[in-house]
Image (cartoon, rainbow, N blue to C red; front, side):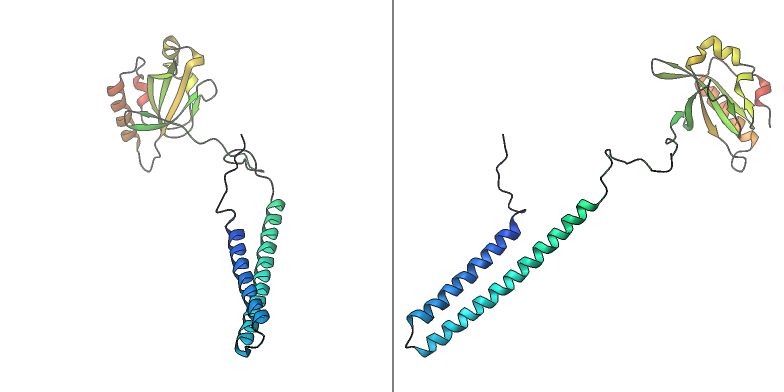
Length: 215
């Protein structure tokens, strides 16, 4: 069913111009009546002429305003036509640069770790950090190991790697990292945080003492 409701706001300029034109037309008719039916009354004739002149002047001004209004409207619409078409979607893609996806985080004991990433594809940590090894089951992540490193650690060579595989399939093992820059976290502080998280979570694969040595 078509919607035939009258849009007042969209037609407001036309309504205003029509009203002013009607008022000018009434003035013109009134002045004409004075000129036609008051031939012997000099004062009324002059009044009629004044009214007709005012009506003609108002009509000229009205036509000028209408011309300017519709000219500007036409130019604006023409400008819109010349604008490039909007790319579908809320955020059009950048034409030249492919930005990386926004980082994801997972909360572990009050700390926000970046990740998780699949261990098969991200198996090294190259900066000072505390990291967690997680097992994904039914869309949820269980922490099976918490470690720390001074940088450049290949996690596939970790001494507890066999324990990770024992507790989870390799295709379901993920890595999440909490970076600890040396200017904010020295090795002692980093290990304190790691041990505190171990005490809270008690993962099934505790790190061997050699993994907690200061780097």
